[in-house]
Length: 368
Image 1 (tube, rainbow, N blue to C red):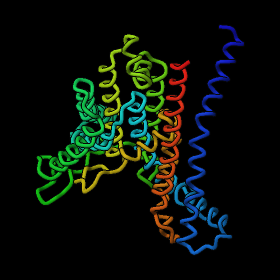
Image 2: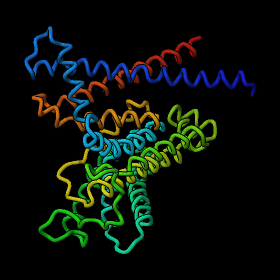
Image 3: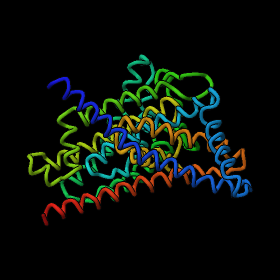
């Protein structure tokens, strides 16, 4: 390939990357501008004070998420699991699947880490590797079951993964409350994991830990897998057009199962590192942790790009981290969920527009 052609390809990649970022950025801007009206309502601003309310909202979010070292570290502790659940959802989306079960797979990663973390006398390096592998295995199983059901029997992965979420949560609660790993029958948590099983903290000010670097490494690895390997090419091919992929010799059933397995493994590692770096023990689940569901929004905003999931996770992590500061300033913390919801609506609209545009193109080709 000539130098001129190489430069042309590089410029095309940059152009496509910038183009793909336009709509997500537009969605973020619109969501912020809409949320300002609710800030005005909650704080009694007049309509003429719109930009004052906008400034207040931005400053409070910044203050609650990045203004101080403690807040920045707290934000990192939110961002880390969101990167894992974001890339887990991204892999499934790339294969044309909706893995709503990332939440359950995340929980299984947590409970596996809580059990493996109790093993005494291990070298810290070995112990952390075992926890990551254990979380990966637990998530693989929990993601693989609906993947196999989808591939072999054509059952809806959305329904199956939703059910697996609840099975996972109640199974984890049984382990926490009734099994030999419970502290005592009257307690609702497992014992604290060994010191050797805990991820190194970045500071004494917060539970932020080296898990953030593990998450970024996995995001880069998944990007390489999807765009630089045959496996990734086949997964993306199935996601774009299953019939066309099958016609081209790609095993659709195998790749659907593989995508769900990889997605589950990533979510499991996310759960394992969250427990190993932040919680140190598993408590009974009165409700879902929420990281898996937030990961759907992270992946959607990033257009299922694993590298983009890092930036997307930082945004959602900052919003979650600033919720308490918003309440201190008489702004309902629900503003955070409002912003997230509007972002999702706008990003989903982009997918709908593209769907109908592609359908129209296919109709024109057939009629032409």
